[in-house]
Image 1 (spheres, rainbow, N blue to C red):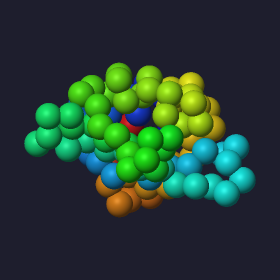
Image 2 (cartoon, rainbow, N blue to C red; image 1 turned 120 degrees about the vertical axis):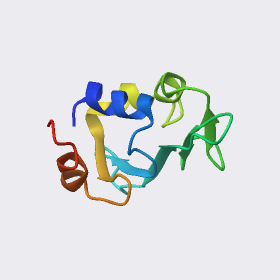
Image 3 (cartoon, rainbow, N blue to C red; image 1 turned 180 degrees about the horizontal axis):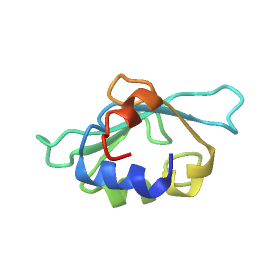
Length: 101
């Protein structure tokens, strides 16, 4: 998935909660989670990162630029991201839920 498309979906908060991924350069394939919950003051969240118990952010931009994945941001490490699921669906099923793609 291309960065621009992913970021647009995250920023809009559309069908993106509970995104599970790992980094291809991680031999243990440790899973990380992120999402968007609009009912909270800081609606963007990340679990299993450099910060114990995860963290929350006010904006998608703040989330993707935070150096919380081995000291680097999600944006910096995007080329090694392997998405396992989004909204409980496999990546292909999730992408196919967008009629314009």
